[in-house]
Image (tube, rainbow, N blue to C red; front, side, top):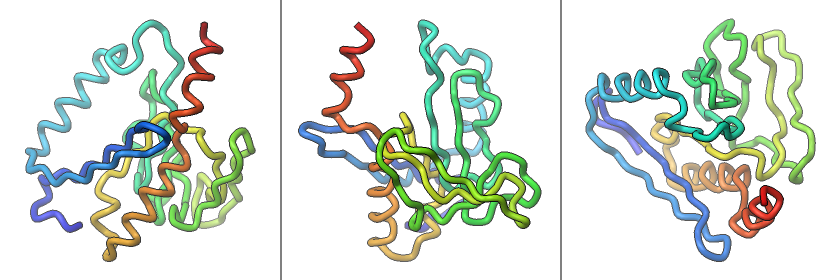
Length: 173
C-alpha cells in the first residue's frame, strides 16, 4: 500500500466487533504533516483527552516505530518495536513483527539481549495484552497484500477479544 507523498497518512483502525469479528480499515488520507504535529501537541498539552478519570495508561504497541514517538506520554504505556530500530535508541525493541510469537494471555514477554540493538530483541508478547496497536506507515513497506493481512491479524491477536471485555467490566464493578 504505497503512499504518493510524504504527507499522506496510512492509518489502520482495528476494533472489536460483534462475536469476536474485528473490523479493520486501511486508509490513505492526504494530510499536511503539520496537522499530525498539531494533534500530538494538543494531546501532550492535555493528556486527559486520552484517559480521563484517572484510568490506567493505555497499553500501546507501536509497530514500525523507529524511535517511539509515544515515549514519555503520561497516559500511554508504549512498547515500541521495529525491524531496524534507530541506531542506539534505548527503548525501541528490534522485532520482526510477522515472526513475533504471541503467547497465551498473561504469559511473560520475551526480550533477548542484543549487541546490535540497545533495547534488545523482542521475541514474544502475550495475547490480548494491548489496548491499541499502531502501524505508522509500516504497512506501506510490505509489498504483498497477504503480508499486510498477516500483520493486521498478528496485531488482532495482541488486542483483547470482545468476549473478554464483559469480564473486565464485571471486575471493575
